[in-house]
Length: 153
Image (cartoon, rainbow, N blue to C red; front, side):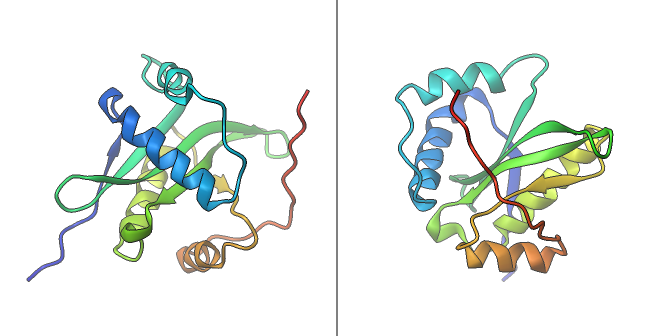
């Protein structure tokens, strides 16, 4: 029997509760500090507007349950004097990994970049996330030797 094709689609307002669940799973997976309450209330108005500046693609398992997401925004590179698509997050729930959904999400991200007229995608992953690094290397992506900083102001 043929394996079901992974499904990737844009997030819709009714997906917000599940998206927030996945975000909290992702935060825990990356060993990051919990975020303040009210994520859905802050996130929804940024995503579901007439002219969004952020986009979220969802991965669906066969049967339609949402098991992952990729979150993106256009970002300007001064060195290149052009915009690229920055993939801020890519996450698949534990049981959803290894079934082609990560590749389907990345294909969706590439299609989104093309749709927006962008020809380059960038992202980061923790240096301890060897599974993600192997996955990105298999895609043909190139690692960049930089460290990401945050500075509360």
